[in-house]
Length: 185
Image (cartoon, rainbow, N blue to C red; front, side, top):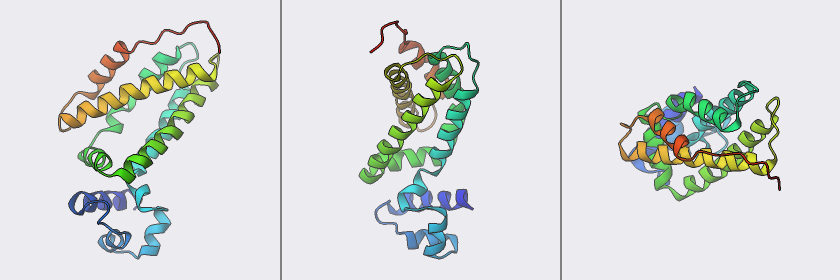
């Protein structure tokens, strides 16, 4: 039901605009009360980011499961490569991305969510068996990987969802190759 509610809300936001669509509108379209809506989502903004949170949890779990002898940059590359189809697999994802870019309140919420996601990914990199990453290096790697993801997402949106995300991700990870030094802060 949660996924269906998120899909209905996204459709309403695309047709009416985010600010113009009320929780009552979403609840009515779903055949439920406003109170029932809040059992699934704490805020109207949270309905937009529903799938993003689930993917973030899975990415963190996949980082922890990667081979211990794999370097952190390669680990990030392989995990994000595996999740590319999931991250941007649908027209709903494209509509959601466009909605976020067009709505200042959602852009701010996205930045907040990305900050939390980056922290969790950085912690996961440092917690891998055999990892000897200091917080600075883990943050640097995570932020570089996020920059690649942002570039992939931007190109995917500009191409109306018709770009090869995996190829773009591979290209980005090759272009932003990270060499781990021995210096520590």
